[in-house]
Length: 138
Image (cartoon, rainbow, N blue to C red):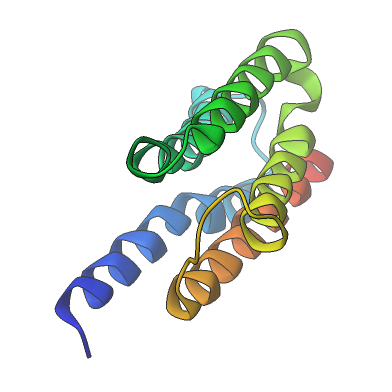
């Protein structure tokens, strides 16, 4: 197996751990609102911002369409986070699915590999599910 792919997969799944741990924390301990809630919602925003930022490399190398779209999605995520904080977990889950759909079903990015698409699908499904579930259990 390719060493870079192994490291990429490892970091991808490590980034998923907070999205697995938080809903379990809420469901099992039923805490009152805490600082952990704030960290979790902000981490969700950070992941979405990171995902939009990953498009910049290809945008600079080939065409500027990914940069424009990612900047708009970044702005949308930030505005939703600030204005609709109460619904942010639900909105964040939907935005991650939108990012995935744009990557997968449009020509915004040129030729992501099959391995990348599989990893991205798994991570998006896990992250989005966690955000949406967290919205309903908190």
